[in-house]
Length: 320
Image (cartoon, rainbow, N blue to C red; front, side, top):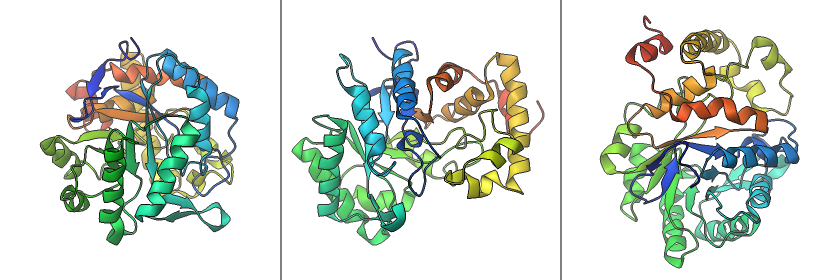
């Protein structure tokens, strides 16, 4: 059965048994939009999805915004003809604006249009999980969440969740319908979810899938100063503070600590970084982005990697 090799866990109280790692389809949206990752070959994207599914990954997380439909189209192509398709999670609320920049819209009619367009691109009858991408504009989050609840009632989506929401905003929308899942950014570089959001989700029985567990590529072990300098101009990371000084030096020092721990376990630094996120008891799964099939295998070890307290102390900068 798919997913058995990676082990599965229940996503909150949804009843979905997901593998600890999911395929993240942000980068395969291509480079031609505000948050693109530079040029991307579709055949490489398809091969990466195929390899992840071969190894047992049983869910794909995408969004209408990724390449403004392109990522969903590629995922749809990958799903065609599969006897046992993976769960498909996608997101709404980011539309294409002038100059291929994103604009935010949480109005009901806009979300309804988005949902139908996503279903068509993905070629599925219903979305396993539909998520609000960002809580913007904040005054419209109740309207947006009501639309998702309506879609679930219609059977067009099976489960509903949100991404990038604070505890306060979750409490606001919970009055309308229970939040089944959240998707925060979480990594050794970005730990804002740790003090309040993750404990809240755990207390409330909300499923958690985290994105960018390898810090958008910074923690893979393949990122160097030279590689950062060579990032194509259309790669959003080129201007991100984490890939520039003064943060760059601190992040590369973190990678050195990951490399030491990875050496002890005979895995890659990226696998250690992902395993660190999975060690948090609130986290059900981590979304890992792959742009080519070669990138898939080295990270899969994260699903079963048990880090010792000493490993974690060393990674976080304490004594090993």
